[in-house]
Image 1: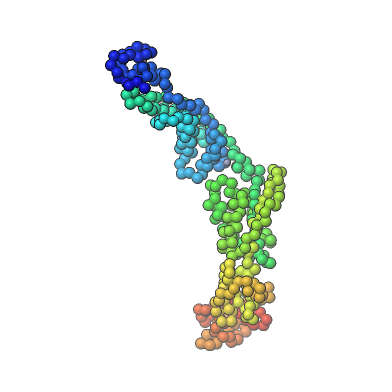
Image 2: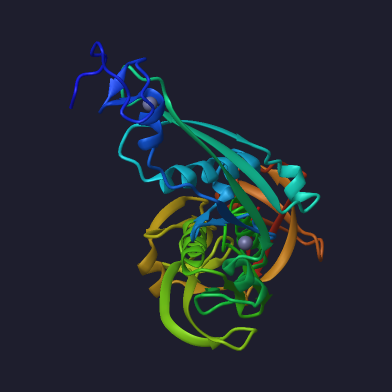
Length: 368
Ligand SMILES: [Zn+2]
Ligand SMILES: [Zn+2]
């Protein structure tokens, strides 16, 4: 390479003697012969989903719901990176962008075309001023329904979620709690793609839901297991037909709730207990003989405990008088008074207060 600014030299093309020179050319002629080698992006297609706002640009999905910026900012950012990527240059460049993108024009007025003008510049030679190129890229907006939203519209789903009781129906409380849990979780997924429940049925078998994705069904199943100490089993690849007639393979996530649940009356170790709570390994029960609360091994209780819910007859009582060892109780249905042991009563009950309980095998028991 010949050194720039030699005295008495002239430009090989235009003949000027005003330096500096590079490769025997003045700045103007050198720039003409050696423009910035860039690939200019003329136009860019931007697909925007009506339903979920997802963008598709150059074959890539951009999930707008994950981001904090508004649509306008996202389009701008994505368009700029597409323009820069297209340039394919080795030398470090600087850019300036200007555009007329306006979110409200896209969303409210259906404006289909915007423009981004790009000025690219670089300074590869110290003695020459900046090299510069400018061009305009047309941004063409297409409002459409993305693949995933169209799946939803055609009733596509990948999984079934079932909640059942072990040899029993779900209690009303369980149904309510689980429905509320599902509702709460779906609120969290409100803006997520492909997270929806097509149908949710609550009937005598339990709760059944058709769920968009296996991931979502599994997450829901785990949460339900978490609040119920149930067990999850998965049946893979049940083939079903979606509403639009195509075959899909679905997984069925079954949450089986424990055989005993809160409030059940059990006979275990020859006395009656009321179930307070059930966890994965243990079952917490209160003795109806002396109000002692104990943790038992869940498996053991499930094996030997006998549920008495169907054999008991509910009854109302009132405490007539309360001594240290004995209390006088009145049954509210026949006003009969009788004595019982204080330790069999729920704690903190005073004279004159009512108690709910039941009669079983000719004996009175007190719940609360
Ligand atoms: Zn020249
Ligand atoms: Zn969509």
